[in-house]
Amino acid sequence: MANLIVKAMAAMSAEAELKPFQYELGALGEDQVDIAVESCGMCHSDISMIDNAWQMSAYPLVPGHEAVGKIIAVGSRVTQLKIGDRVGVGWHSHSCGVCTSCLAGDQHLCAKSEGTIVGRHGGFATHVRAQAKWAIPLPAGLDAASAGPLFCGGITVFSPLLLQRILPIHRVGVVGIGGLGHMALQFLLRWGCEVTAFSSDKNKAEELKKMGVHRVVNSRSDSELKTARGSLDHIISTVNVTMNWDAILNCLKSKGNLHLVGAALEPIPLQAFSLIGPQKSVSGSPTGAPATMHTMLDFCCRHKMAPQVEYFKLSEVNKAIQHLKAGKARYRIVLKNDLG
View (cartoon, rainbow, N blue to C red):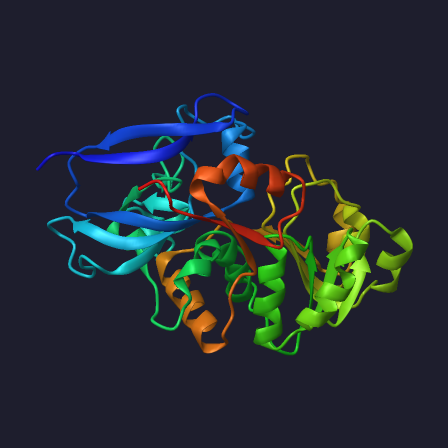
């Protein structure tokens, strides 16, 4: 069988605009599937990889790790999926299956895991390849067109609800109401929590209240942060910028937890006594394991939850990137494949 020719949009160097690019996929591995991409969400991590902000990008780089499409080929050992199944692929495309993390069901923590856009080509393309365990079937009740962002942004903010054992009686804050934060709010509200949104954008306040948020606090206002002092059981931070972390931590009750999912590049200064005395904690997590992704999708179906998205054509990816960089996205961008 001839190798599959993939049409894609790729960055040829750091911070470059994406250009049309073609490449061949080699022989399909026995535990892999090939997926014809219908749409792909755009995550801020794609921009970080395009710009080599994390110093691990390789060029040409085809971004895209929130891909949704139909399987067109399955490896010889794949039994749980078949040609024609609609699936999604997120940040991970492979894990070893035999390390302690994998055997414990934490495949996303595998030391040998493969990122969908790290050292290989991702989903801003006509096709993407993944290990079958990381191709997650879409439930019938889920809208495929808007589902892409769930496979990275969604699972990133859903996992802390399970990891931190968040309960419906808890009061929870979300710092940063963008692509990640708006999904965190939706999950928490459907979870039954009282939810506080911390945002520096005053223009979002009415929008957030319409979503059902119980309180909006200006995250850049020390006086407003003081009004939330000692009021929250948990805070989930989605931001990648420097904050007044002491003031954020002070919003927690005793035994409260600040959980980080946003990739802030600068160190977070915290006083030991601010944790020791009130027995507070700080934690973090990346995305989630395949089993957690299945659970999240089922939750979305049950509670009719979907990301709020804007659509662009894949050929208009550079326009979409500028829209995201300008902070205009409400709240995630999905690229529809028009490359053929």
